[in-house]
Length: 405
Length: 229
Image 1 (cartoon, chains in turn red, green):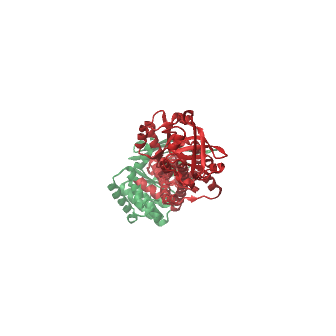
Image 2 (image 1 turned 90 degrees about the vertical axis):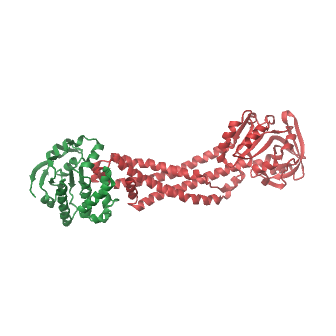
């Protein structure tokens, strides 16, 4: 306790110096917490948008379907898979899909399109598809009409109530052909999707492809991606071949690469900030030791073992680091919370690009505990490493030259 | 009885061009309860001699035996403990720990010795009262005058119940009034606790109080005189 008392008092010998050093740590922690929060927030938002837009957090399909996405590799959903999904507590929503390419024709024009058979109610719960209906109405269960993406509809010169002819290959080479009324026009934020998507009721699609009860994928949702690992672990244990379960990051490796690249950039920025913090603390420690050289010499001369002196200096450094880190941490919580509640709207080209990618044009912030404790741990480690220097100095201090200092 | 036995003590400093013999073969003994001044001009080697005697500076050759222990045969760790338990230091610039109060400075060394709290508290009070600054027990060094700080330093040196006290120019920074008071108190402590005091000094007032004066010049003992005072 005596060591702690001396260390604490030493810290306040030159209050301004301690305040400035702790202040640099304080602001460093706030900046890094804000930056990390912004990164995590934007990743959360990207992931959320991607999974809620189409892929879901996880999908179950056959191993063969993953290798070759043909209608022949679709599967029938059995009770055991349904039971596994229902008994996995992390799973909040699920929906079935049957999708395959076909030709879509109007009176004079034809274009390739992706037909997606959906369960209208559950699909809307998972992907909020209804909100993209630009004209007409959303689908009902058993509906015979279709929803056509806006650019495809424009290309084919069709509108609400017009007939759309679909023509393609069904299950096991059966010819798939049908004529369907356009019930709604969908306008997605992504131009790619607007060119090719046609949605119809699942049963109608199964009839069209002559694939009764068959699905191409079973889409599963969890609360957020932080719950994904637990859900995946459970599903992977229970779901056996020929079925397989994949998470959004396995289904969207390009998004994962994008996030990883962005993370690397963030690491670089944070490394610079941490380096500033490191040099701030280290400079103070160097000055402190140099100023107190004689005092340290006297302490050893009168009988203080070098390791005990090292402990005092170690505690001093640690206290200075913790003071800045903890106060920075406490101050960053309300600040990050404010931005979490009030995301920053983006404008200009950045906003346009994000809208095109189907992502809301906001800079989101995350309140995940990791945002905060990571900074505290990193600053703590930095401080611990720097604190080794005074210990080293205590052990190597030349007594006579210290006493003459 | 000899408390300190010094034999053929040599300290050579090697600079880039020349070798300097700061202490050149000193042999001398100190007895219990002595009040000795080591005097000599600047650069005569008295401080170096005191530092080797106090286990602070390793001699080039020779022996320092304190209470039967060959000081320079001890490991670095044991040497620190030996200093703590056997030698009290009083420095020219007081060298109190600035963040501790007068009382805590005195208590600090007993804390290092692992003495019980009650004993520490009582002895701290006793030492500071004996030095006439019992009322400044809670004052930090910055709030004390030079004379008061040096009295705290003496109290600190005595607190650990050492075999002897080494005082390097203890009065150099003090005015004449403070010097007289301090010397009076040190002399009183010397008699009361029978603790050996060895001073390195230029100060005539210290020499006037000393019962033995060792004069050093060019690292050698020039004279060694004893007085009855």
